[in-house]
Figure (tube, helix red, strand yellow):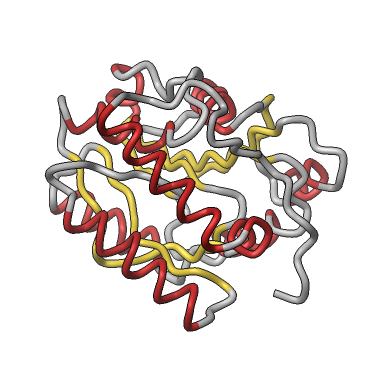
Length: 237
């Protein structure tokens, strides 16, 4: 059984999209857990309409950990709320995950709405990078597939980390288990952060965060001023 865990905060515009994409999958042996950080909009109403398990959330690391505590599945899948899964995502991903005997895996991304600039930037500066550095410097973000026993062995996400706590989980996992980037399928992810904060600003923030984590260690202060759920309402996407 697969437990899909989604942290949320005021996600009434995006949550229906990701939940609909999950519902349309051929794979059906799953539960969906929404870990909510106190939404004031219709997020919880939407979650219940889709028969999700609802639990208390917080910042993303805490929300994911809380979701894992109530999960019933043997494999956990942590997914961002502003994502969409393509058709047959679970069938392809789980087949590759099993064939490669992976313990923790993450995915390449494809931005939506699809635009030439954002698609190029994500492909070159994220997808190619995480595949090339798969065995050297693991990256795990947006979608993370992990065996429950490994997640518990690692004590879950480090809630003291302010930015890139998902990469930290992947790197800790790679020291004791098999880590890999799934090649057979990608995750569609909203470009809202780039539109709200600017491509250059977000890119430089992640670049310096990467350097900091490599040469100093996990980011445990808010030096990069990372904000959770501060986006403007989406347009017609």
